[in-house]
Amino acid sequence: MADRDTPISNEPPALGKLLRDRRAHHGWTLADVSSMTGISTSTLSKIENGLLSPTFDKVLQLSRGLGVEIADLLDPPVTEDRSPAVVVGRRSVSRHYEGQQLDTKYYTYRYLCSDVAHKRIIPIYIEVRAKTIEQAGEMTSHVGEEFVHVLKGKVMLFSEYYEPIRLEAGDSVYLDSTMKHAYISLTEEPSEIMITCSSATPNLAQTLREIIKDRILNEKQ
Amino acid sequence: MADRDTPISNEPPALGKLLRDRRAHHGWTLADVSSMTGISTSTLSKIENGLLSPTFDKVLQLSRGLGVEIADLLDPPVTEDRSPAVVVGRRSVSRHYEGQQLDTKYYTYRYLCSDVAHKRIIPIYIEVRAKTIEQAGEMTSHVGEEFVHVLKGKVMLFSEYYEPIRLEAGDSVYLDSTMKHAYISLTEEPSEIMITCSSATPNLAQTLREIIKDRILNEKQ
DNA sequence: AACAGAAATTTCATATACGAAAAATAAATT
DNA sequence: AATTTATTTTTCGTATATGAAATTTCTGTT
Image (cartoon, rainbow over all chains, first blue to last red; front, side):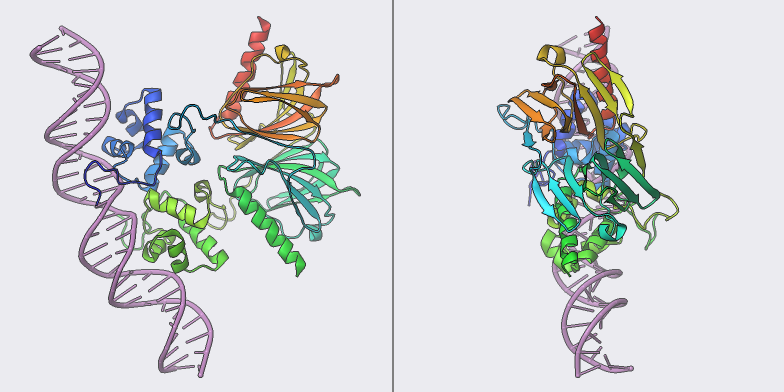
């Protein structure tokens, strides 16, 4: 199967193309990239021409050497390979209190701009009604990083490796969300926070929703 | 080199672990995953045990079959595999009106949590005093995506491929920031917005600051 | 405990990725 | 144009990734 010339690797969509483009753009030779990445020129050449499906560690070396995120290797900066007529810019608006909503007993999650797929940032508007750690339930953790901004009220942020910290409206926290974390409200009224989760990963949104749904199910029992 | 039992693949950090965890979590057998992904059970087993460095297309099959994004395969849910003494979580707090500040004539930019390097999300608090497009100056564009949330006042968002859109406090927009864009305030008082930029590139924060500094220089002339 | 069935691992033959060096091609210099 | 130099592609031997089937390990069940 696959006689000479026929590209074998059907899968890595634009990996070869991306490499070639990027290389051309910077005026690098294969030898240059080779020393940047530690991959031999012969292999690089084959990758560019789609003659082989590189090993995962080669892909990692590439991504590191070139300073390109893996996600970008898959999701090429959508440019020349499509008809130039196609506009790449996307935009989505969520009005106040709009958004795909999920309710738990002590939290309301509103996923903003959820019509945009494969976002790099997942914005979630959260109304915090939990007032104790018990109500908050199990602390969650997920891949990536998270930026929190308190919009209204006062909250306490609990996290795995830190003392709880008190946040008022206007305050922000940036945290590694692989740490377990949870929020409770310190005010009588529900507090409101905006969190944005990093997702090189289109599916983080999915994952996050699953986490919440799990919690809802657990509550029901 | 690498006698039996010694894991060969040094690079894919927790790929195997991730697979195993996720599989355990869902109660899937290797055969299940095999039919989900089209990868043989033997190969899956070896991947889990770090006995081989899978081909890129296998990794893609995995990611698709399991609904896990590639990025997640690289960014392991950082857990038990490191010595528990080593804390991986980072956290940074910026209080209201704190942050590394840059002033232009019509804007004040406050970079939040700027002590955290290599963030995936760049949060910037902006006070918008510009009231006309002239004052806003040239529209900016940069790699990545941007989430905007209006905190106070009313703003108009201009962007390359869309009609200007009016946003009030509480409204949000998600946009491809490679489109040129600019904000002006529609209220007498300065408006306040919070933007979070995705950073695919290592140093987007840097880049963004440079853009602003350029503008400051241009203003001076 | 002994067995049966399911699941995970290992074995082994084959296919393919990898890099060094050779060959082919392109670019620059005389 | 001819020659040199730089760059890319091919060739080819070795290492390793892959899947079918055999083996082992893990589960429950009687």
